[in-house]
Image (tube, rainbow, N blue to C red; front, top):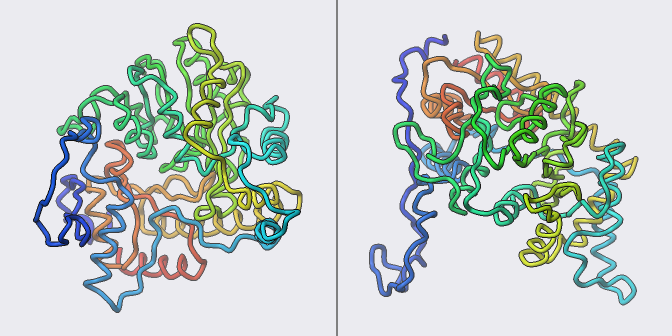
Length: 441
């Protein structure tokens, strides 16, 4: 155990949100003055949310540190935001589409809410080759996180939910907002009606399905964010069989599938029978550098049916048509270029760059005697600090090394004692972070 960390008081730190400093928070702009109240009560579901969503909390602490230390050069290895430029073949396609809008021949208005047919076909044929995914089962969107919420709207609020622990917080928070989570249990940090499937090194970060209670919906992410672990074919087969036996639906997040370097499946639909029990959500954000461009997709198979036999794809189509006007046609042109042979090859170079960063980070933490997971099938290192509060480790690394990470407990109770470190950074920043970590830890 590094000497600076051995004296930590290992008491989990609660996430807090500072009061708003927005001058428009009241009519007059004077803090604390209330000029008018509506008669509308606050949603009971919003009241059940924990006090702050994880990533804005990180930004707040980062900003507070920067204000106190204006000369410090912060290295941001926290939020999973890509940093490498998008290949020219892709940006050129978007620029061409944008310029065409200034001509009578090239102008386009609304497109299909489900997405450009050519892009839908390219997704089905390129990313789901051999899996019998049809063009009409692909719904192009403005990103995976938006689609997570659309799926939540699709499903009845009475349905029960299971999530991996630790896992991406949007699955839990969106479940709370739609009224599916119950009350937060302060002593455990868990919501009463959500089943937390423990995923830890001892079980290869895959839940023990023999002891997992039956739920209607299972959120599952592979490669997992934050642990970086990719489920094997045999593990996903168990998950599909578990869902079939219990009449459950899997919401499968494959946003990091392009980073898989071994034989792990890149899609749930590689598993026979998965189209009868699963929806898959994915994104161009991480593999194409579209975090700020915004483009994703969801696959809803025709074989996926409600208990009464009604096709779920029809309801999802209605949700999309009601809540969404379709992704930008400029961005979709970029997505199509991503899936061209030249574009796809260019993106592999960026992916390789981030994975080299991940190796640097993994090697650094391991050289300090710490156990590190991930960094092989995802661009995240999941680092264990036994006996320590993850918020304390986060604060220690920020204060001593001016490096922003993510406290593991922000991904669920199972993330306590861990931090997540992102490899989405410029190489010089990652190398400098390595030097600082070796010096200060």
